[in-house]
Length: 369
Picture (cartoon, one colour):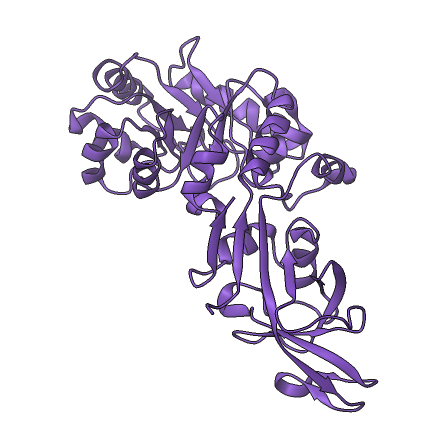
C-alpha cells in the first residue's frame, strides 16, 4: 500500500468562491492569481475549477505554458514580468500579457520587436516593493517617448495597462493615499483615457470595494482562506461564504497503549497523565505539516476532534484518541479541510494560510476531484 498522505483538491469550491468574489467586485474583471502553482493546488486543478475567471495571473512562464497546454485560452498575465529578455519569444508565442516594473524590462520589450497582447506598467505607489516610483523618476519626457513607442510598436491595440499593489488593502486611509500617488504617477507618465487600471488584491476587494476598477486580482480568498488582516471581524463574516478548496488527509497506521507517566515522541515533550490510546498517523513536517504546531492542535479522526500531542516528526504525528477510542489502523485523519479550517492550524502553528498551502511537498499524493 502506498503512503496514505493525500492532498485532495475540490474544484467545485474554486467555482463557488469565484462566484462569491465576482459578486463583491462590481463590474470588474477578475485576474485569478495562481502563482506558486496555484498556491500549491496545482495549475491543472485551477484550469478546471477557475475556467470562468477572466484571466489567470502567474509568476513564471512555465506556469503559463502549463496552463496553455491544459487548454486555457483566455488571457494570462505575468505578474512580475520578464526575468530574462530571452523569455520574450515564448511570451509572445504564448500570447501572454506582461507586467513591467522597471525601465530595463520596458527596453527589453521594445528591442525584442515582438507584438504583445498587453503590457501593464507597475507603479510603486507606496508599498516600495516593485514598480516605477514618481519621486525617483527623471527625464520624464524621455520615459513618455519610450512608452509611446511601446504603445505603437509592441502592442496589438496600442493601449497600456496600469497597475499598483496595496500594502494594506484593509485600510481605507492607506488605499486612498496609494490611489492618490498612483494617479499622480500615471498622469505624469502619459496615461490615456480608456486604458485599464488594476488596484485590488483580496483584502481590498472585501474591505475597500470602491477600488475594484477595471481588473481585480484576488488570490488567497479564491482558495477559501483569509489574508493576514481582519479589521473588525469583517473577514470572518466573508469567510463563511467561501468553501475550502483542499483537504489534507492521512490515515492512522499504528495505535499505542501509553501508561500514566510515560513520555510521547521526541524529547518526551508530552507525559501521559492517564492511561491512553495514541494513534500514529502518516504525516509530518517533510510533507509540509507544520512542526511548529502547539500541543493540543486538533485534527479530525473519523469525524471527531482529537488533539495532536508530542512533537511533529518528519513523517509522523501522535494523536490523543481519548475522544475517538474506536479508531483503528486505517482510520481517516483530516489535518485540515472541509471539517477543520486551515486557519485554525495556521493560528495554532504561528504560520499564514499562504505558507501552509504552498508548503505541501511533492511526496504528498494529489487528487483532483
